[in-house]
Length: 198
Image (cartoon, helix red, strand yellow):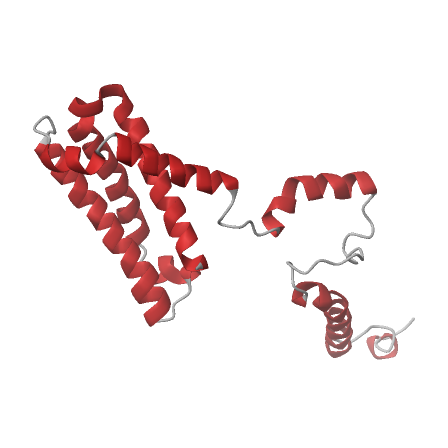
């Protein structure tokens, strides 16, 4: 019968197990480090080592489903240009500025409250984008950590402001009011998306 002192050479000590565990983790990290450091936008003809074990059908399905997230699309796509042209046409043919400014049918209380709420949204966006991101150099991913109430307040004020502006302008264009406002909103978003690319 063996004593514990005789059987101890057969059992690995905690120190040896930790050493083996570290070596295995190091080898795994070395193997896959190249995959994590490679540029995802860089086009390569070789299959990645992580996807070598997938069959062609599965790879095609993954590419079809998730391939759009890898490619960067230009801000000058035909869809964006059509939104811009449509919003300019709607702004011109509805006399939007003149109607909002001088038309007596506009419900001024609803319209002004909506304008103030949308202004709150724009101020929060300017604060987060200009001051926090560019001046204080805080990443956009960290906005919620530093200012957790900013995005919900901006979202709520924009939704309520849109409803109020729609109610305020309803006497002018009736059922077309939400459509007109949505087209103008999309034109503004497309314009803002195109600005940094100059």
